[in-house]
Length: 72
Image (cartoon, rainbow, N blue to C red; front, side, top):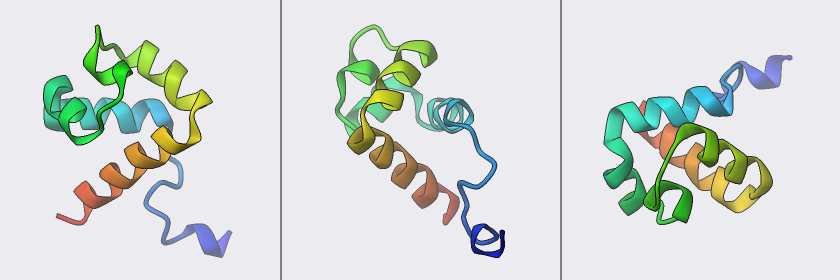
């Protein structure tokens, strides 16, 4: 439990992370920062979650962008 105390992703769902990123950047800017089709072509939270749950490298990029945004 103590190792999770300093983890900024602890307790955050993927849906909450994607929603916050979309609110912060919008779909167009998010697609520029992380160029994946679920952000570029007909984007939605649902389609993004489906893709990100299946694709570890993409999820890692989303989580990294989220954590970098917290440090500002």
